[in-house]
Length: 580
Image (tube, rainbow, N blue to C red):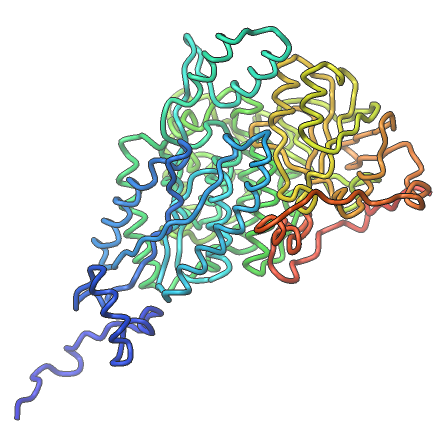
């Protein structure tokens, strides 16, 4: 009889892992046979199995390069002793679907992406996950899935597009939407429009300003669920492969350390993310996405927390759409690390763990500021004294609305309502000159249920800009693109489709928007109108659109589809009822 000469202390026993329910024991021989056919060897069954969930697609520059980035992540996982397995999920590009019925699919895709990540990872009991993301909704969707599953994971953003060039001017996709408005006004011709169209998107990467994609990429870095610095590197920068390799190594480290996602997604880290959004002049969509991530993580965090972050934190980044620079310029100036360093120095953010294994403040301390850079200032000398948005209430929005504050200096706006029951109707009215200076444009029945899908109104806001119509306000129960700017308020809740007060407003009603007092009010007897009000039938919806309509919560709750989402945060001091 032979014996094993090694002592128990000499034997290396693989730690228990989630994946062992699939890979270990005689009863799992069938599962192993499939895995062997896919490439696994005997030695691989003791390695952590890591999902690489990719939102790669050839339909848009935002995601068209992500298949290549996955190679680097895969190599990093293997180098760190893990075993990578790849999955793909979907994406819907806002830029292509904007202003069309297809835009209704955009926000809905956030839930589908989150659900599909969960299904792929849970269905195979994998040990960790790297989510490779690009266009807007894929970024929060990845964080939502990680928060929901609470396993080791991180989010890796494919990076910003580089600027386009017209003559000596650097441009982004923002300019083409504004050119559409200018073309409608007759100030540019077909050839000039085509010139802009061909210039603004020079290659791979997501929209170049501090629009929703770059806003959320920064937010997740400051939150700690993306490795600091990885998301900043532009899509086609020579440094991008190294960042993918680092992400692969880091996920294996987090699995081995037992660091689940909710270690990094906490109330403190969500507040840090909200502060970063304010400081960067970021997209109002971040409010909805951060509250959705919080809901998935079971963290007490909502729209009032986002508002407070903007009260406490001025804008310190001079970024488009309201400023001068693009995300690639921020990267060159010092990136998210530099922004986090400024916010740490001013006491606006708190220290917290990150997926790099180092604290947020340790990462921020290594900021390398470019000499003479003009993109990032400081809290003491801000670009704008107040944050990038505010949550307001009042007669028209008793559960809240989000008003954008970058790109203008208006505190109060009052004017007659011009009411439209769809985005298309409003766009046509702008293009034919039916609405103009002094008006309050209201676009309703575009909310989460009403759309369904809560479209963005960039086509309308950009058309106004392109036609040089500046003295207007716009309210909607839909959303605004991160590229929108001007005096615009979205996410009006409750939405028209469920009988919210915005459904009672009529053409010519006097609307007053007061940012300081946080109110949107209407000079009309809404209570009297309510008595005779008949709710407009919702537009026809089928398939996933009907499923979404049946389950989606209010925009004030993050428009999530999970059961029993947290109630909206509505401060008692400013709760409003319809005027009698």
